[in-house]
Image (cartoon, rainbow, N blue to C red; front, side, top):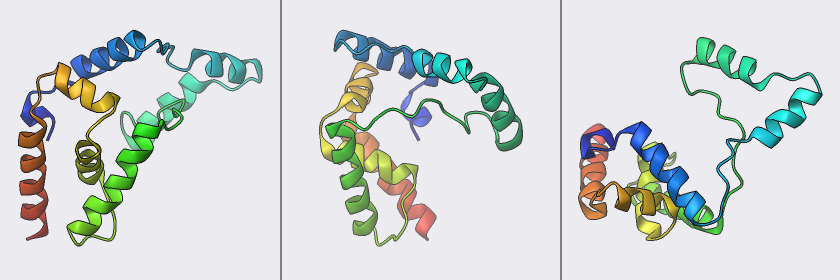
Length: 134
């Protein structure tokens, strides 16, 4: 869905890092945690390689970031969005709707930097969800 809106993954990652760093949040890619695990003999890169091989690229992300208040708000909206659509489970489309409904947060800053129209994206997601439900 984001690709259809002109969002390229590499560019989105670059914008996310830029926005985090501008906010004073170091985007270290979890290196301190990886170093700590390495000191115990755990090779995170090998785990990632095996997960990618067995489950597909990107299946394993490390470290998992802590949830910010904005992320928690977006997840609360995610559940509301799924329920409003009459669905008991939620997927990535609902998370995107929840993020858009929250109205704030770093994810929306990234989308704004990439010149994505939030209202247009919301309509596109709802259209796709409705089509999948049919």
